Length: 291
Image (cartoon, one colour):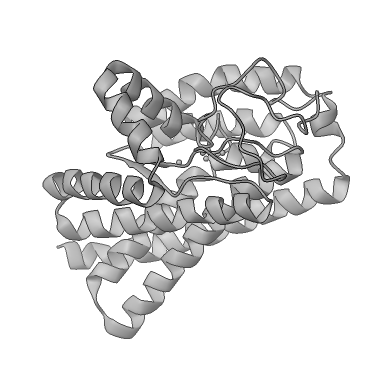
């Protein structure tokens, strides 16, 4: 949890704060009034980070300082998150969670940079996940979808590698990491608000945002899976779904070729099925160990 520095656009010139890049088409959701330079690529996580930063002025100055040293930002916030998770869940859960978050977010970073844009390395937020920040945004819905799906793909590869290592070593830490990775990436593929699934399926159909909200409601009612973060995502996802229907005829979405829509939809479905099956399998193996 889905799509987000002082960075350079494709022409190599640094953008001043609050400047909107000229190559973004008018129909794009990003082409609007001036946008803060550090707009988060990942909506819920980045938005909550912005709120926390605004609460404490000194904390805001610290974040600005950290953004000047991207590696330090990742290391320091990663260490803070590790400490927080370790206090509540234990050190091995903390290691697994931070590692899986890092792999997931780096998938987004690699794809953003592959497209010629710049983004920070992951900034960790205790109990909320991680976020990346970028100065400019993709010019088409397909490119945005590619960034959105890159995180779950990288995360799925990382979780699968951990599962394979468990099979080779029988070390339960690798099984724990695999379970966390499969669950984290499956959750991010829910097509709601600004989770990765919403960016991936945005060019396909606005009705998929409704399906995402129904999925969260079903998880709460039948699986009794309720969390503060999911409640926030669901509430904010309602207004986002309504706006997506209003933008249904926007060229930013309608210009996406039918073949690309099918490819995105099938790629999303394949990931969901694989992650779902893998998560059930790892949890079935993890339960006897936990006992």
